Amino acid sequence: MLRLIAKSLCLRCQCATAIPLHLRQCSTLSSAENQQTVDALYDLSVDIQKVRQLKSWVLHECPAYTKQMRSQRELWMSVCPKEKELVGIIEKFPASFFTSSSHHDDQRDNIAYFQSLNLNNRIITKLMASAPQSFSRPVEQNELMVCTLQQAYQDLGGEEANMKVWLQKLLSQNPFVLLKRPEVLRQNLLFLRDKGFSPAELLRLLSKLRGFVTELNPECMSRTLAYSQDTMGCSEKELRGIILNCPAVLYYPDVILAERFKGLLGAGISMSQIKEAPTVLELTTQIVNYRIQRLRVYGYDIRTGSLEVLNGTKKEFEMSYGKLMLRRERPIFNPVAPLKVDD
Image: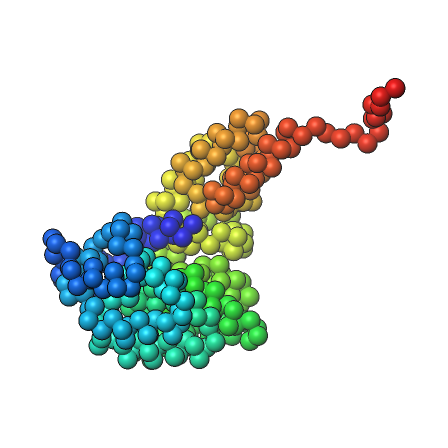
């Protein structure tokens, strides 16, 4: 689902502008591998072939910041003390490990800050690997965003005892939320409040959106909500209920929603069915058609049955599909039928 979210956000309303190539945080790429990087990875017992498969561009970067490897290793082992796990992280995220020594003080300060929040070291390690930029900047910037998230959680009625777990889950699901501006979060929550969502509903949305609420903006949400309400022919109250069940309605642009409505209706599914199980909108038309065909083989008519069986990840669908097969193949037990016994 996260991949679908990320893809839709890239298309969303043409609200974001591309970062010019000369401003990106990329170093110069060479046609030949940087031998310093290769040697440093060998010294760390990293599988070079795996790096070549996953992140080959890292081996061609110059400069590679491998000179201060000992201090970087000590820094990472403060949150990931197991050698084998650290090697695995370096294989998957080599660019996150090899950073400029000018960032080391910021990295130490940020590690200390997140540890002061009593966050699990595994979560901190994931943040460092997935969103290294958030650790290479002054700790005050992360403090500001974390405080904004905590304040929003409390203002919306979240329980103090559960805040640490809530924050830890949100950061692990979307590490890049730290890189967003706090004002964006406030503006989006105010917009949704003005649309009639209660504090409890907003907290539920904030949790369900996994921090992706910071990727949205009022203008795009307003356009999407208007389109969805018009297409489904529902009231504002009904629309809020649909969004609570399927937050995807908020972040998918009209063009994607239009394609999915068209595909579902073309498959014989009614609009009332979609409103009852709106999470079906998270699936691409191709996935929906494939799953409908699989179900049809075993006599399941999606036009008269529940759409819930279509939903979920591939693994979840296969489980639902398997249960339908068992029901079809298992003989029905009749408690009043006479038992056959041998004479």
